[in-house]
Image 1 (tube, protein in one colour):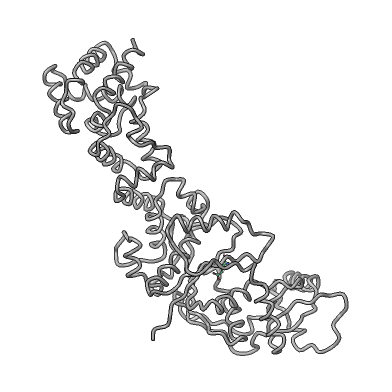
Image 2: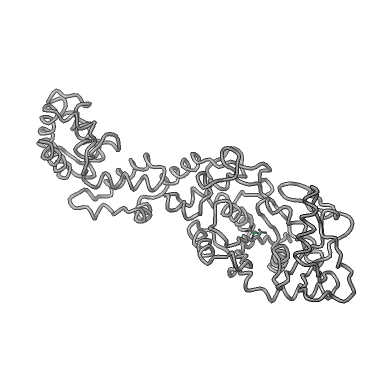
Length: 470
Ligand code: GLU
């Protein structure tokens, strides 16, 4: 029987969940779910001083937003201290761990001494086999007995064989003087007890893995498969800064990104599948394979994220977009009086805006600019409102209410006919219409704007411009 895939995402809630973390979660989620396994969420909140409740909430909220659901309950390490204490005691009882009375001051002094000579000091196992009377006044730490010979070796699913010689490892601390267990210890205990079969995480953890393997071995736990994923770097090949993407996941929502776009973007940072770029979650659940993760770091590419976002905005049904846009200050067409609220109007307006918006923020801005009558006018375009311009505008005011406004194309052809009748070029008409209706040049097709706003509203706007610029 194939082994059950159980993966986990194990963030420390010391800061907001950033996109590197979300990518790790996504890889773990996809692998487990592809094989009908389980994906767990474990909050590594043992560092009481650095934890924040808000950060935990942001993690949960981010998961909800992107639609990654975890199995079982959320595990909190802070609630599992009894379990860790039991295993520390077990190792002490089995003589696989021991109390070490070397004080922090002594340790620091040794380290500094070595550093001054350009060396690295490694704990010298001095209490490993200590049987004497413990020195007074020192609360000991607990250290695990690391192997003295041979090597710790594992086959990383991304990096291949990793081997660390025993000489490079020391009897590391598993419980501090205050009794609290250390990171490498609790991670190994939890992964083992939760039945985690595969650990996909950032390669900043690769040096922790041999230590965790030592814990597994000491407790006869089955060692999971590890995949250490290279970092996401800035386009310049440096550590990601806020400017180029190291923001909280929920910031992406505020900036108008769709979760589908963000997940698609993230999965491609470190993984590829032929030359495909567009991946829905359901497609990823058929093909994602952590063994094909890239071995080289990936580079954050803002343009690509925007491109994907526009793709997914275009894919989103209009009714759903209306709902999403409410968070960006967009009110439905029905709330505007006297305009065209038919489904055709919504479809033609959204069709135009989808072509012109890379984010929901851009979409909302343009929508509101169209629906709300202009209060200011582009000064450059206003120059066209000379006496001839005003005359054309007067004629347009008379003409608009008479035209057949059944569709944007009807309106466009009526405007051409209007031009022919008055011997005006379309290039003389359109800028004036844009000025009066939208307050500025550019933007959506005039036929669509007039179709949606209706001829009454458009005529009103043209009059308002004329009145304010006598
Ligand atoms: N809590 C660790 C972190 O946030 C991750 C531990 C792990 O994935 O093994 O970096």
